[in-house]
Amino acid sequence: MSDTTRRTAFLHEMGLGPIWQQRHSASASVADADVSAALLPDEPVLASVTSEPVIESPVETAFAMVDAVNEREAAIAGMDWDALQSAVSGCTSCNLCKTRTKTVFGVGDRKARWMFIGEGPGRNEDQQGMPFVGPAGKLLDNMMVAMGLKRGENTYIANIVKCRPTDSNKRDRPPEAEESGTCMPYLQRQIALIRPTVIVALGKTAALSLLQLDPSTPVSRLRGKVYRHGDIPLIVTYHPAYLLRNLPDKSKAWADLCLAMQAYEGTS
Picture 1 (cartoon, rainbow, N blue to C red):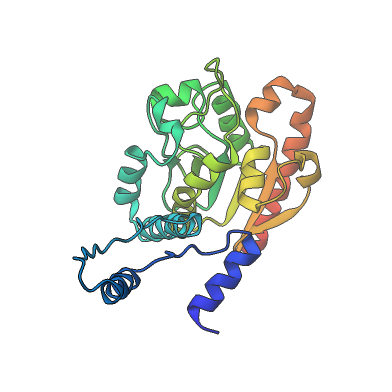
Picture 2 (tube, rainbow, N blue to C red; picture 1 turned 135 degrees about the horizontal axis):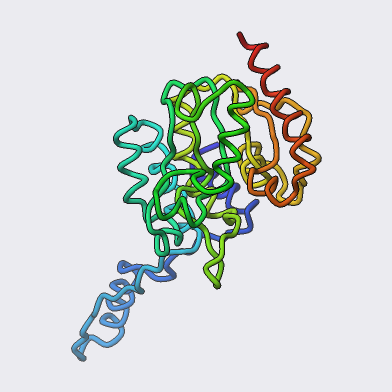
C-alpha cells in the first residue's frame, strides 16, 4: 500500500476525509479559450488563465499540527539538563504561560534513585519557582524523612505541569488533559535523564497522567499495586495537600510508601 493510500485510509477511519482538490486547472481554462477562438475566428478572444485559490483542508491542517508536535517532542527528547530547563522557562506551548509568575522545573539530585511527582505548582510554588514549598511540601519532606530520605539527597521532586493552573477566581485547580499532555514531554525527559529506581506518583492527576488511565479512575483503586512506567516501578499514593485535609488517610499513605520501599529493595 502506498503512503498516499495508507494516509487516505487512515483519514477515513478518523472521519477527516475526503481530501479536497481544485475543480479546475489552468490547462483546462486555456483549452476553453482555444475552443472559443475556433468557433468565433473573426472576434478577438482574450484568454485569461485563472485558478481557484488553494484552500488548505482540515486534513492537511491536522497533519501539519501532528508533524509540529512530533518535531517538538523529538527536540525535547534530545535535550540535556541545561537545554531542558531553558526550554521550560521560556515555554509558551499552552495557556498556562499567560498567568504564571515563574515556571517550576523541579528540584533535587539529578542522579536520584527516588523520584516524587505531583500534579502542578500551587501559589507558593509559582512565586518561588520551586516544587512543594508550602504546607504540602513540609508534609512531603516529613514523609521522605520517615522513609530515611531527604529532599535533595537521592531524591528528585517534579510535577506533571511546570506552570500553576488556576481557575477564573485565581484558585488552584488540577491541570486539564491538554495542559498535561503538552507539558508531559518535559517530565518524560527528566525521567529519562535521571533514570530513577522508583517513581512515587502523588495524587490522582500525577498517577493518571503517568499511567495514561481513564480520568474517572479514583486514587483508591490505584493504591496497593506496583505499576510500571516503562521499566521503572511506580507506586501511587495520596497527594500531600489531600492528606492535610484528610488526616486519617495518612496511615494509608504510609502503607503506600512501605510498598514503594519494598519495590525499591526488589530492584537492588
